[in-house]
Length: 152
Image 1 (cartoon, rainbow, N blue to C red):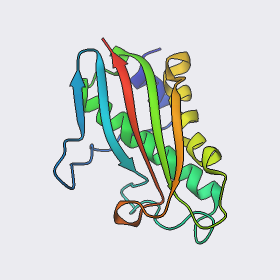
Image 2 (image 1 turned 90 degrees about the horizontal axis):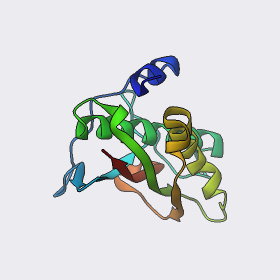
Image 3 (image 1 turned 30 degrees about the vertical axis):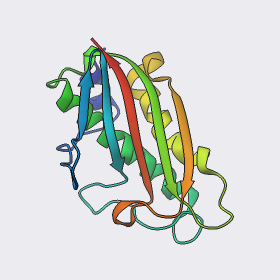
Image 4 (image 1 turned 90 degrees about the vertical axis):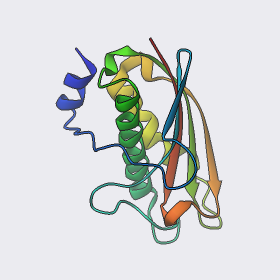
C-alpha cells in the first residue's frame, strides 16, 4: 500500500506545510537524509498551547505530539515533491514538551508522534529519539518535534 493510501486509510489529510517563523528553512536535504525543523502542535484550529501537567493533560499533549507528526509528514511530503513512498526510514525524532514542575511523563507524550510514524510508515517508521521537557516552547505551543528521515 502506498503511503498516501495509508494516510487516507488513517483519515489524515496533510496540511499545507508551515513556513519558517525565523531565520531558518523548514527542511534541508543532504545526501539521502532530510532534516526537518521542529514542528509545533499546531493545526487549522490553533493547535495545542499551554503547559503539560498544568493546563494541558498528558492525553491532550500526546494528541498534540501526533499533530507535530502530521506536520512533520507534511514537510517531508514537500521535501519529496509529494512522493512519500521514497521514505526509507524515519531515523530519529527529537521531542520537546513544555512541561510544568513535577511533570515527568515526557516519553509518553512524545509517543503520540512516535506511534503515528509507525502507523504511517510501518517498520520504516521505527526510530531513535529524544524526549525532553522544557520550560517554554515557541509561541506557547505545548509540544514540538523535529526529525531526520532517510530517503531515496
